[in-house]
Amino acid sequence: MAKAQQIVPKDFSHVKSVDDFADRILDAWHRAVDGIIEVGMLCVHARETLDRKELNELMKKLHMSLPTFSKLAKIAEDPRITSQENRSKLPSSYGTLYEITQLSNSQFDKALKDGVITPTTERSTVLAMRSTGAGSAKQTKSAPEKARTLVRITTESKSVSKDGMKALQEALAELLRFKSISVEVTPLYQKLTEMPK
Image (cartoon, one colour):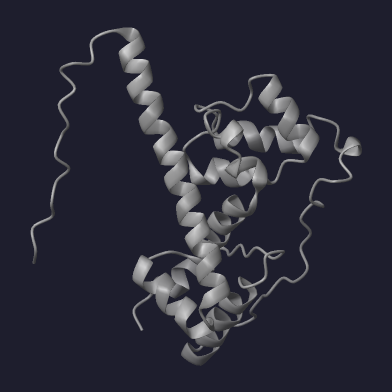
């Protein structure tokens, strides 16, 4: 087994003042947000370029679930997130960034103005804002419509056959090719896909 490489620490001995630390930390933080957006853009490009089988193969190589892939693509497709003007105010968690994409335009603008969205904003804060309807949703005809559940897939049996699971994975990968569709799966689905074949 190959020995895991460790991150070589950088020399920060020249960083001494509060301003120096703030500049360096914020710079690294912003690079993290940029990295998430770049990953999302690659997911969008992969979705548009690869066929179903290749998408499944890619996600296996990445050890990435369908929901994660879908969320990263949604982040990259949201102009409010990719706006250079907003980048410095955003958290560096893809889960939190995804929840921010679910805000209406008025909720997003209000949260930025009020300092609710900052680099340290947590997912729970955004979820609370969404559930309370902070920022009037009535003012946002140009905002994306609220997500609606179109299909729920259930099984009556205690297990899913290997062929059935493969067909389901392929169908979900195909759905990811559409920008307007996001896929969320249950912990049971995750468990079934992680079981040895």
